[in-house]
Length: 440
Image (cartoon, rainbow, N blue to C red; front, side):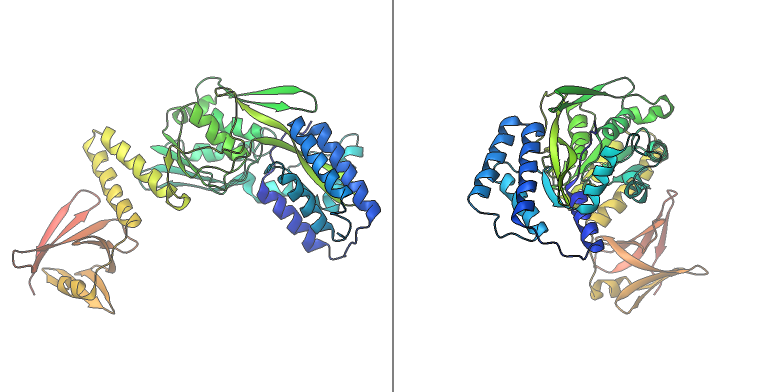
């Protein structure tokens, strides 16, 4: 049985892809509408994860059909939207959807009829999305950062892509996994990724399937080759768009007390979904199962995953970085390492809280300080040392500037008691400090 999560974003892309490749208008008649309606009603009663809700949904659309609500709907997309919204009026399940998608219906029918469906290669969409790994990098302060937009790497496809990403960040001081734009994927992928953060087998989650009344357990499988990740501080960024399998990852690690969640409460979709053809070019995505967390014995359906630190999604990365630096600085004793952390932390604070100086202030800074010359040009301040390149400066903090797009030096303008700038102090990333008196 297929067991996976479908993201709302993918559903939209499926519809968009079809509409862009099929310009032939289709008109529904009463016979085709009835066939579609009856098929959906029966599939829901047989498979939907919550039987009582399925009956209520089916009864409601049956009542709507008998009352003539669909009689004059000839546009297939409008019909699919009406059916979906009518079922939503009973219970808004973000994984449930009726679509008009003849291409997908044909594919599902072909797969069902095939004795041995081809599965030698992953879906092209997964390859094109690099199995969900949008960006992997090292931020200032040796902070690992992974922007993960889908949980599409499984044990067959994408496993090596995940391993390469995790190996790249394995020497970081801390790791941030950004799920703010992640709409879901596979629970198998969730467990694979969780496995990197534990040094022993951990029971993270179960999935219950209503059609066969079965429960599948998911346990981590530790990777001994990247042991540093098991102790690495972990932060997960969320938004209201974080959904399904992405929510499971955050929910599992939060309840295992292995990660700090920063951002917004997530979308609230904890159901497993499969697609079924319903005739006349229509497909229904049916939530047939649900997640059951190994610790809480429940899930995040409708309520979402509440972050440990609640901030707007746009501020989540900044907040995580600030927390990481503060924790690292509080625990670091080695002098050179502590200097570097404070150096980077000051740059981060300046970037997150930008300021600017007015023209009068910049003109006050302009002048010659021994072999250092500061010039005010076109509303900006420039710095050049004799025989060295010329740099545009940007504000960092009151009285302090740095080279634009340059983190190697910072300049402090020192005022005397009369408020006149009479010298500059230049701080270097190698822990040197040079002072120059104003000469003119």
